[in-house]
Image (cartoon, rainbow, N blue to C red; front, side, top):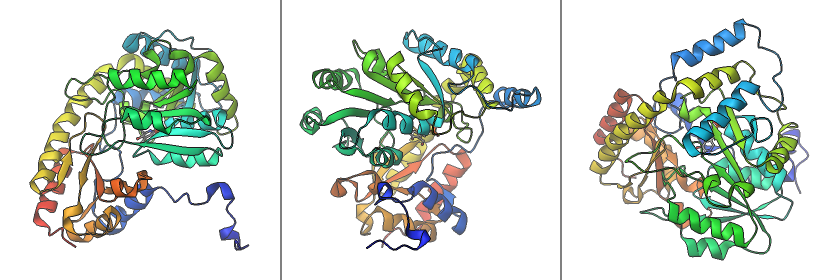
Length: 393
Ligand SMILES: Cc1ncc(COP(=O)(O)O)c(C=O)c1O
């Protein structure tokens, strides 16, 4: 029997959804004074001109509710970005909605499209808000595992995961936490599955510009015939290093964007009014920022991967994002969580146990995610501390 104590009165839709591991590990970093190589936020803010544009918007009185779909100049800027980078031709009035970060876009899309009992295909390891929102929408997740060492999409596994109850395929490329960028061959195969089973594809592309080694990010909506069944989600947080602003967007065909808006209007209704014109400015004027950021991150990725490799961990070099995954089984801890809880004391460093992003507990047990979107000195100090420590249980 559930207790009737007020603290225990959460609704069934939250059953089994644990608090996000990112908050837990960031709190651990603050409590112990350890270096936070866990949560994915950069040490440095994005372009000064974007901050100036936000200040200017506040000073000029843009401080009341923005239109629910977002301010016109940001919707136009998002459409312009999709046209310039990907050749997509969007109507900014009907095919773009501004959201409170990608997180709200994901929530609104799942609430709008998933009926109780519907199955949702999701790549695992998964971003934790996906599984929470699938459950809150009453859906059932069907994970398709990206397996180490390459973390590629197993197309047979994908096909086998589809049933007659599958309704939505939730894609994430570039992928957090593995850094996998799905290539055209993989995406074509996903498109064939979506077509055959008439699925709606919700695609989270927040790392679209943080891709390394000349790899190409191909938005799913650009594949032949896919635009009409695809809800694309992105955000300014990672692209412009303003993760705290929470300005994101959803784009797609009019009917699907209307569906997302139908849910979004009852979540936040509208998102940070003065931040929206500033992000419009960023999208239009600051593309050099994210081009440089991707190059910088590539160098930091190499530095952290080399450092971790010297510790004799299996290190899986990512093609994109802020994160590298390693396997810590050799240190003798029961799992990644035990390792990560001991890490502040052993080494003064915090990392994220990836096991919470898996249904397949064997695959996830000893995987640990490290963030490299940090100042070089922070990474240097992190690697120095790890090297000096005894990391064994
Ligand atoms: C894959 C993925 N999607 C969405 C988000 C959240 O984006 P936002 O901060 O814009 O809500 C993140 C942030 O870490 C992420 O990694």
